[in-house]
Length: 327
Image (cartoon, rainbow, N blue to C red; front, side, top):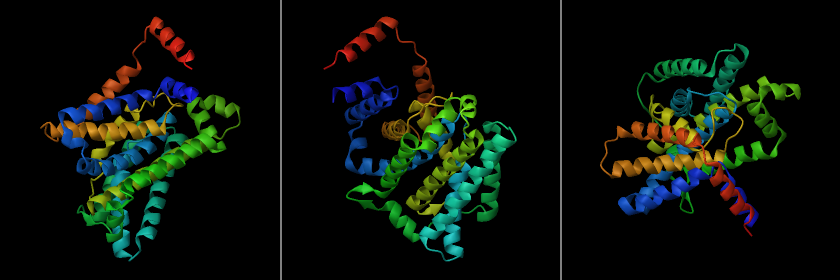
């Protein structure tokens, strides 16, 4: 047990857990309504949707890239699911399958442009996002589309008091964590992110893993967009726009560095909960909704600055001695 405690306390991602616990404690003191049952039930679905999208972004950033097409993919996924289900009279599950296949193809194309053409991820994903926004306007006519009733019931439903959106997020976390931590694909994925050159020497197909990363990220964005459309009962052409900055903020606050290699999917999820509760607290204190971008930007700046703080050597030694001497 003591060994497990030591591993947790030594983790470079433990800070977001402490920060989230402190935030909920502060919320209970200054705005108790934000931590009551109804408020939590309202916050959890949006935190879950943000978590799923942020997991996709975490995968890309761990490969030293960034995907700014998240807004377009999320918006498109809701539109495609709703329109395909309505126009082709498909059930919800087949409509979702078609949508996720579209998202997968978008991710593959993005990955191929980055790896084969050598265009930087920032420029590539911005361009892909612009193309997707144009496609959305053409496909939807620029008007919202009602989400399938079955999808709406699922997104609003719960099992044993746990929202279905949260259950989907838990399933995505478990699957991604299992793949990265317990499979050959996962080990090679980590190796490519830490050092592509070393991975090539070890005969790892680096380009294949990089393309797969963008494909998996697009699927995560698609799942998030589908759940969002189902939860609000409407597929809105620009629904994903408000998620671009929060998704990046969740990854940064969760401790994943832009240098690639390292990262924690679970820490990203906790950071998504942190950001969702922080916004709820700020709004409860009377701030206008427009402050959400300021809050998210401040969280990114603080998390980035905190990671670069130099801990005094004497303090590091005392902490190490205390941990090593723990029973």
